[in-house]
Length: 198
Image (cartoon, rainbow, N blue to C red; front, top):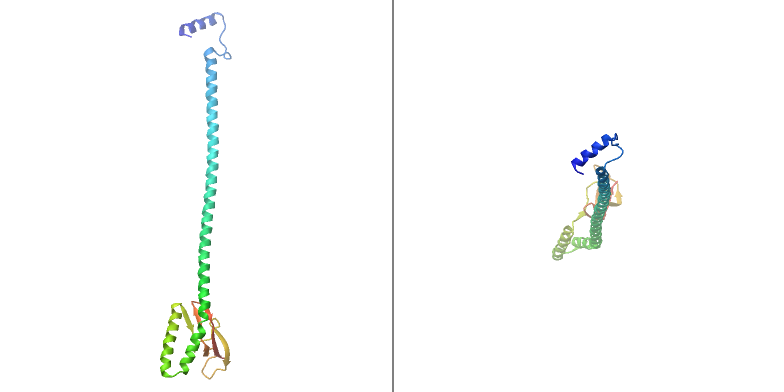
């Protein structure tokens, strides 16, 4: 509709005494209404899709955080298991070695007894073997427990005899060692058998 036609249309309405009502839209407004409604619907659809995608993204992030947490926990549990298992294997290995070495202690005891009763030529040979025995024990980190003159300590000694303390000697001290003890670190492999002053 051109500007002249509109002008003529407006004059006709004035002459007729009829004014256009606000309720009756003109043809242009009627044509614009569906386009505006379509735009509003499209905007609502986009907004709805955006909210749906945002919700899905948040859900995916929560699941990813949950999976990551589970993975971290599983990795930590596995690392702890691996360390425990390695420690258990090492402890078992060392205890097995200690059991075998404990079976060798009587050999050292017998060598020391033989050293006390043999002649000079034999003594040199036994001393070499005994030195080698002690070096083997030292290499394994094993120490002798020979507490003569020390206070009796039940953590390392086993009292198999006692005798009254002489004058000037305090009770509770080791007077004699019958059988040496052995330890690795703080673990006793064999208790020393001793006589204690009472």
